[in-house]
Image 1: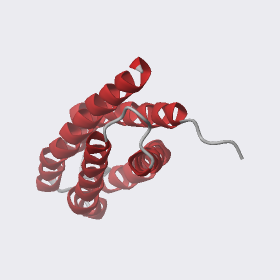
Image 2: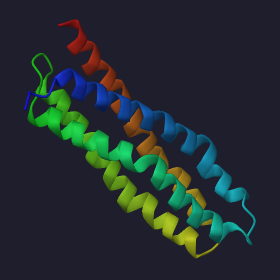
Image 3: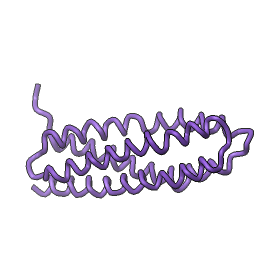
Image 4: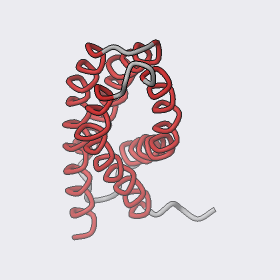
Length: 150
């Protein structure tokens, strides 16, 4: 089996990360705030449907981002600083941790019925993921630029 080209791994990583950066800004700026506008009769069904649909949209890109991020950190391509690759993984761990500890519990509350306080916590808490993914996007672009320059 031929060796895996590190540039292809980084390109897949960058594509997944940048896709998720764009998506998190849409979720933060549009989608999550609209939870507060859903009527009480539809709120529970809306919240449940959100979880099903968003999982289809984020599942594969998040797994690609994680797998390629691990690959890059464990097998750093020449010219890419290990510190930046491990920083990227740390940011990913914080994103996944935020998802599990902040966003998922609020989604579970919303699946039980309308809860404006949960919506506010969801929007406020999601700023952490939004900022972390944005920093990751800048980091990935920096890594890509460094690799393409050599």
